[in-house]
Amino acid sequence: MDCCNCHGSDPQRANPAYRRVLWVVLAINAAMFLVEIGAGLAAGSASLQADALDFFGDAANYAISLLVVGMALRYRAMAALAKGATMGLFGLWVTGTVVWHALHGTLPSAVTMGAVGFAALAANAISFGLLSAYRDGDANMRSAWICTRNDVLGNLAVLAAAAGVFGTGTGWPDLVVAAIMASLALQGAWLVIRQSLNELRQSFLAPA
Ligand SMILES: [Zn+2]
Image 1 (tube, rainbow, N blue to C red):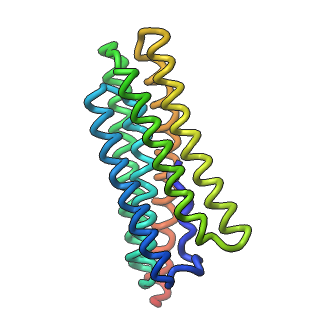
Image 2: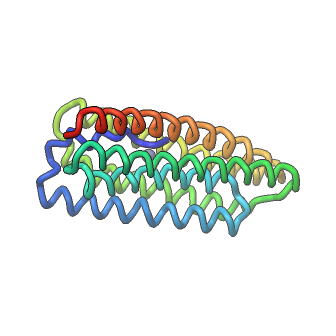
């Protein structure tokens, strides 16, 4: 799940140590996005590619938090729009992958899915641990926790799909999990796009 874009009100934003941590989690999330896309292609797993969408969304949030948050509403809205549109395109691509695999009856590598699923779980746990030191205030901590919980649920779904592929000797568990995750990602992308278009409209009506 794409984590909320709640860094706008982040009181720690000016803290240099916190910004260093943001760069680290940005690197972790960007690296895991590439790893899951690459491994998903190599292993023929659609659910790994669907899980990669979340790492993309989170990496984009950290990048926006580091580079764009201090700018005028117009630029923040443009960055969010770019993120939403990219996620929407990836979501459509994963949906296409699901259909292609369903038509061709391919069998993904359960071992690769399991190994990368565990790596994704570790990446999310490390990111949460790094950021939690800087979460002050109940609301801030709560949103970070909900975000990580949803990410971990996605990672566990990939692991369940790996077990299902291993147990049934078919690709269907991979496709079911990927289809659910891709539709959630598409919904999330649509919300981001709608909200950023609203903000863009506002920014042109009342230039800041
Ligand atoms: Zn996330």
